[in-house]
Length: 101
Image (cartoon, rainbow, N blue to C red; front, side):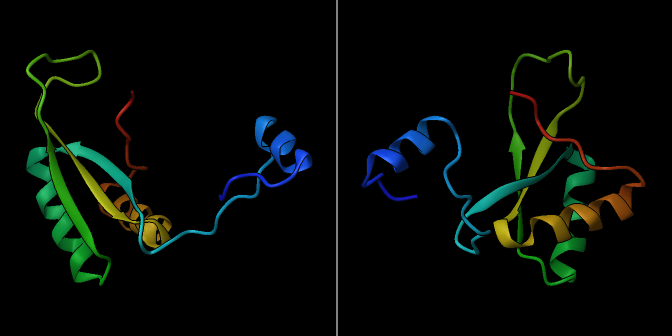
């Protein structure tokens, strides 16, 4: 969204009612958070289905309560996110997890 030009646009932005931008092929979003051993295979399946995807290892020295194994994040373009998540769900048999902040 561009900068608000009127008071009404500013007020809508403050209250969180600004218009939602359509999905863009220029932005990347997280599609899944998977164990490292599984993420490479899933990424290859996404690329084989013509969904541009990259995998990034999620390095953390401290193991958290969320996981006890090395994890990776899969990123896809924003306009293909729903498609990618559906394919990951078909492969895994359950919806993909996302890294909690």
